[in-house]
Length: 383
Ligand SMILES: Nc1nc2c(ncn2[C@@H]2O[C@H](COP(=O)(O)OP(=O)(O)OP(=O)(O)O)[C@@H](O)[C@H]2O)c(=O)[nH]1
Image (cartoon, rainbow, N blue to C red):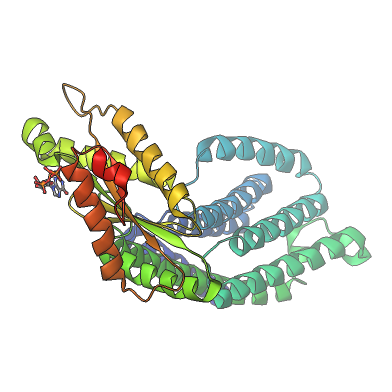
């Protein structure tokens, strides 16, 4: 018991400190609070002479719920909505159930065990669905929850069918034969805390990586990340034989937007354009803020006719946008130059961008708010 108490206290302190140091990671907060609530429930349970068992059972179950909510946040990568509604409903339901079951200690234990088994299944279900999870950590997580669920399943079976347990009337009678559960409790809490902290480190690492790869204003790839991804794409296209198209997009007279409406309004315009670009791109396309008010879009598996259609669509959608960033509303236009990226091209990314830039220059020369391709078409020249 003493070892279990010490392990639990250390685990709770570790998780609470980790949660306090990382307030932007909701999962660790729920895990820390959840484990604290479970421990609080266990303490209430040990004071059962004065505190009814149905209260401690409800508190422990609520703690498990918080642990599950943490796993949910971990899967989503951010906080999950509806927390207070679910908490309230659950608190009322479980308090009612345990209150009516308090006359039967055996059924309270069976119900509690069934809840823990369900939570174990939910915990596993959440983490195996994390898209960018680390395999070793996922296996470890599933392992400890399987072990925990299995122990409670054993407990559920014992109290349901074993005459020795079926006849218990006081908690002490059952407790005396639950040494295995205490032992597992020590291993479980220790391993659970370690894995939670490793998940936390992992998500911080992912956040740093995302920050290093993306432009903070538009959340598109920054130049460095784009160049890396685009070079890989050129390599892939060479093997798969897929053709692509590179678009260079530049907002027109953007300096005037800044001069007339202020730099903050200019930022809003850039962020909105990035949204338009993101909506136009497919999942396999690469979008990037190339610098200032210049953007790149690398289309995969696409010919020049399709690229022109897409470029025209982006241009038209953007032209019709009205951006509310103070008074009056802002409208803007974009010029687009695009160049083919043949599967067998021996050109470097830099040279391909150069071609798209020549087409963009042509679009600017022609009066802006238009799309031009490389090599320059007669139609573009006459516009
Ligand atoms: N608000 C804001 N402005 C930026 C940012 N980065 C670059 N700019 C501004 O973008 C403007 C680009 O101006 P220019 O290169 O002269 O181009 P332009 O006015 O768009 O003219 P054309 O490209 O010829 O149509 C400059 O005034 C920069 O200060 C940014 O992150 N936020």
